[in-house]
Length: 314
View 1 (spheres, one colour):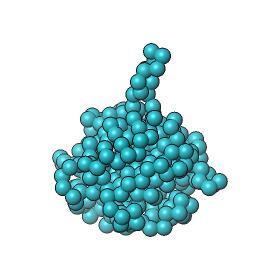
View 2 (cartoon, one colour):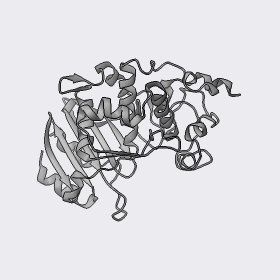
View 3 (spheres, helix red, strand yellow):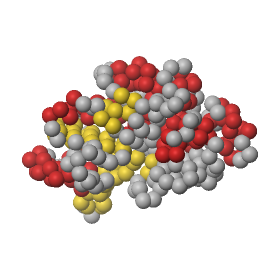
């Protein structure tokens, strides 16, 4: 990998940080300034993938039931709703964003900003009408992530953040974080977590190692494999697929022996340039972070594919 070349390529993108780890070794580390390495910062919707890990851990430990379980076991009001299709919503539908709610994440009548202005976020989401039969179509919805966080609280009897401390952050050595909560004190499932870039790298490395960390299996290999498989095509204009709060995709390689080839990867994605990429075939984890406070030159959403993927493949 030509690290000098990569530094020059990334310079105009105003990234907050870029970290690349291959085969367990940190091969590239760049911060916009020195203080960034020790600061926690918003990871926005990458929070969803962290929540996915917590849900997987809870299922492995028998704290939460299996994915096919109806969500009405946690929210009995769904069984009383006039739309009987709400009784069909399962935990798997929540994890894959296919519950069917009529939702436009950043606009329209039912949206993430309106949820955050409501007195009870969970009730707000549950009351939204369905636009689709559960399982039929993906619709990106941070409210669904809030339902999952609240379910984890119900099942475990502790806060989502405390569950993370005990079963994820603690084992990974993540000692510093900040996490927003809704009016009921339920930590935000879809956004609101702040972490250091190096801790995001640990999180990605845990998944690359199929849930194994320092000889402890934090998440079972089977659960990891299930959670990062594409369950449904991502909704337009996004590309690739969607697993359990993880995005999936591939990038093409130059044809070899007249056969086309591509490298599969999955990733956590947060607003305005927060990413954790895991590329199992290349034993690689890439972390990209940015903030909105310095100009308007957002890095392109495909910065990994355009600038980094060709080099890491070398």
